[in-house]
Structures are given as C-alpha cells and as structure tokens.
Image 1 (cartoon, rainbow, N blue to C red):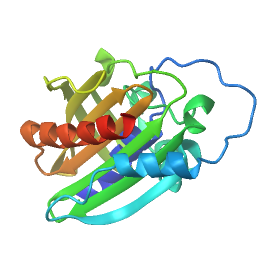
Image 2 (cartoon, one colour):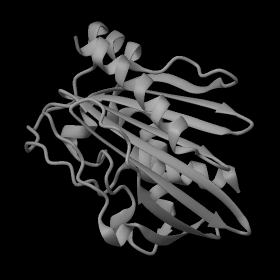
Image 3 (cartoon, rainbow, N blue to C red):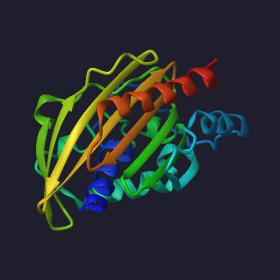
Length: 224
C-alpha cells in the first residue's frame, strides 16, 4: 500500500502538478531547447546528496521538465487515477502540462530506504513564478488508485521561510486499512524552484524542515 500511495501521490503532487496555480508568462511557439552543459551541471549541483541510510532509487535525470521520464510517468498515473476533485491533482505544485514549465530545464532524483522515500526536483523557470497555495477544497479528498480508495488529508506546516518564497504541507494518505504520510516542500530562489516529497509511515515536520534547510543551502550556492 505504501508503494501504491507514494507512487500515485508523487505523480499527482511532485511531478505532474496538473492543476497548479503558478502564474507565468504565455509560452512562445517554439520547441524546447536542450539544457546546456552549464545548466545541467548547475541543476545537478542543486540536488541533495544521498541521505544517510538511503540509496539512489532513480536518477539523477536532467533535461526539459516535460520530457523527463519521471514527469511522463507522473502524468500517466494522474490520467489513470480517478479523483473526487480532479482540480486537486497537482494543486500548489508545478504544472508540467503548461509549455513554459514543460520546456524549463530540470533535474530530478529519488532516494529510498525501508522507511520510505524522498523525491526532489529542481527546475529553472523562465520567470519568478511560484505556485498558489493549496485551495481549501483540496485539503481533503479521495481518489481511486488502482482499485483502492485512498483518502488524502492535508494541512499547511509552519515551516521557517526559506529562499525568496517557500511552503510546506503534511498529507496523510489512508486506504485498504493502511496509512502513509507525505511531506511536501517547495522553495523558490530567483527563477530556481525546488520541489521535494518525503513519503513514509510517519513524516516528522522537524525532519522535513531540516531537509528543506539543506536543499535551500544548495539553491543559494548555485544561484550565487
């Protein structure tokens, strides 16, 4: 169940972001350019190192955000899931369906351990856009995930401010008599946006804040 919840939630929240409220300029009609070696190196450097006790489960993958394998898998998972509130699929997250987001250079990595997983993405946006907060109607909803009814309940955390803008949430996911928690963090420094999900049986806010602090340090270093 943890694997089912984490996989779909990662796709709905961390990678797909299908209904984000981020404001960005209208895209120009052009094909996405491949990230330069310098851009790729900067984004790779912004990713977290392997946390103690965990191993790399995926990546690092780099390229235009919308073309990444992880993004495509996330979008497909969202299409297959049946949500009580479809508008909540990627609320408060980056919207990979928008061309200006899909064409942005990005790097993604995932770590795993017996206790859970961490997935992180760093995206170089064309402007200083930041997703809108989670709408009230999206703080509690259900979804049919591969035949299992999963209930999501989310609350905003009082995380100390990071970067130019930041936000953190803690979500409980329950279904089929099992439970998981998902901590999500988003930080913006200039045009760089870092999105991170921590999935486990229990996610402690203080641990999430520490990961956010380390991630923000990396953003500050590569932005300098």
